Length: 479
Image 1 (cartoon, rainbow, N blue to C red):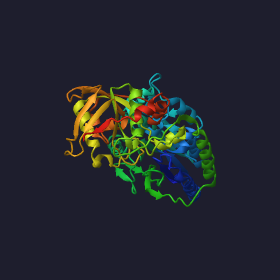
Image 2: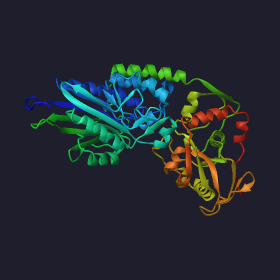
Image 3: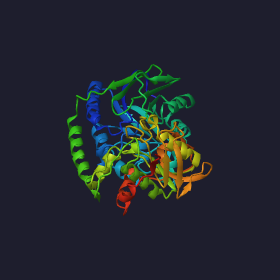
Image 4: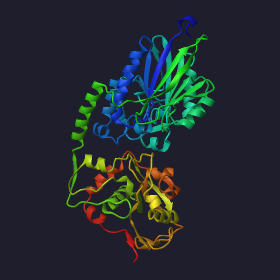
């Protein structure tokens, strides 16, 4: 530990959950540069807490994350951890290529390769950075979506146990111990209560904005919101006992009127390259497919078909809110499919009782469901939308009372039985209990990674006869 007469201060800037909101990153770089100038002789550390990447953005999709890596480098980040948007929406080989070009360490202690029982080569469990003689010990962890990570060849370890080991290793060697936590605020609170020796938890994942830090025992918790709207700032100063303590903390609004010329220029170049890459043609159609979120439509049917074809399930249930507009006639490009279906949502197969299928379809007829605004779980649409189906036929009478409008549901000519289990192709977000909650009652979910819904649409558009089939009615109104 440093001598008392060598008291020093350090400024720590942190961002989280930027989600490829590139309209803010140039301004973040300008803010960071201004803070470095203001810090003068005192050291400054800039870190990111994950979900910097989001494949909803054209720049990220068209360059497969290279835009984000260049922005991190140009802004001067000195350490990052991964969020679920990095870990689950890119394959391990893509991440290896991307992070090979990152000029700062990727720190995460609760992700291991199944084959090696160790982190990927580009990931470190912990590091110690020396900032003008101040030894900063950093470790990190990400939300443990274990079922999904297994499909990518990784094990997601219980984060608090993994962090405990790293903190114990860092504490004797570091003046300051910081956790980069893409775990969410409730887990951060538990961490502060259960793990001693942490000075600072910089948080993300739940998009929490802590305008003033939380103090739990000797640990300070921070979070800077989402989308690059704020940058967190913490100032730590060495006390008479030699320990560093937080003397200032909060979040600074990002002024989008201030720009970093180098970052802005890089963004322009990447945008052009991304748009060019996404001009790749994937199909040519001889008709347009209309979309509505309030009832049956050909484009919604095509999405349901794509999920059933890909999963091999008896039937499929998808929400039309995944689609953002009509599919036009003519050349269909990768960029157009990305524009119309931007969500990083994966298909899955579940076993679902007939009564829960029926209930979900009844809900689909109600405005309070199809007009519901949904946030999170990978969903990047506006409203939930109604349910599009494939493999079944639904007879309904809209004049009847809610939850009693479906007259009959048929599968291969046989009435759907409420007490029977059916294999259903659906979307991963429903298994988390969002949107049409009855679908989350499904058993034995089998998630299918790394394909997104737009990848399934691409395959379905290339399947002979798919456009004819999606024009056939599955919802039939009883007159």
